[in-house]
Length: 138
Image (cartoon, rainbow, N blue to C red; front, side, top):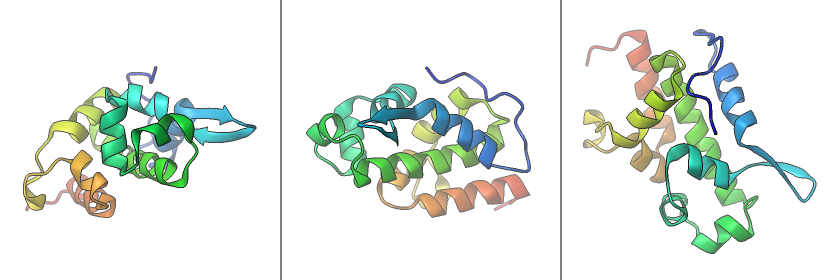
């Protein structure tokens, strides 16, 4: 299970937080390290069907080919956005996940970050979070 907070957050660097998440999701499959879809699904409070829909893969792909490029890319994009959200939440993983799944974002037609990432717009979400962190006033 993912820890509730990331220890010793470093506000100036997003990498330590993202690294902590990736390490907790790391799994060895057939002798190579991958980001575990099972652990990611658990961390995010999803079911396999929802994950598959958001990742644009068949639900069987999640179990039978967890290292598939499309599955891994979806998890990586999510981690990137979560790392940016962690910078705003002071390292509180559960708060960042709650925001990611539930907060309607006005600049993006009130879609959630989760929906935007599924639409291929993770760069837009990270940009928005960076503007919040820099003091964007809208």
